[in-house]
Image (cartoon, rainbow, N blue to C red):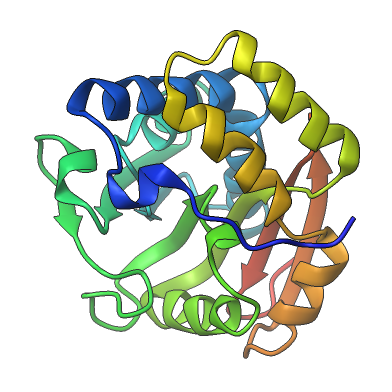
Length: 224
C-alpha cells in the first residue's frame, strides 16, 4: 500500500467549534481504546527501567488538548513513575487552559538544549513529509536529555478499511475525513527506521503495538 499525503481538517481547524471539539473527543476515544495511551506508557516505562529513573520531565509535542499524555501520567503514577508534563501545540485553541502549555512550532521548538528528559509525540509524525521527519527528530533530540518517543499509526490496507468503518461511531465529520487520511499517509516501521537513521540517534528501538500502532524510542545516548 503506497503512502499518499492527505489533508487533515483538524490541522487547520477547518470546522465549527463544535465539530473541532467533537473531533478531539474522537481522537481521545481512539487513543484510549486503540493503543494510543498504552503505546506511550510502554515506552516511558522502558526508558524509566533502563535509566533507573523514578521521575521524568516530558514535553508532549502536537499535544492537542493534552488528554493522552495526562492519561499516561496518571497511569504511570500508579506504578511509582512521576512525570512532569509540558504540552506544546501549534494551535492555541487545541491546548485549552492550564499551566505548562505553550503554542509553538514542532520544527523549531522554543526551548533550550536538553530542557526535558523526554520529548514525545503521538499521531504527529505521519503529518510530516519524509524530509521533515529527520528535521523534527533532530530538533527534538536537541531539547531532550535522554530520548525522543514517537507513537504513531502503521499504514496497512486493513487499518485503512477499519478507519473508514469507524465513520459509524465518529462524532465529527472532521474525523470522517481525518481518520482514513491519517492511515493513508502513515509510515511503516521500516520506513520510519530509515528516516531515523538520518539523525544523530545513538540507538533506535521500534516496537509494534495494539491495532496498528508503533512506538519508536530514539535514544540520545547509549543506554541499557
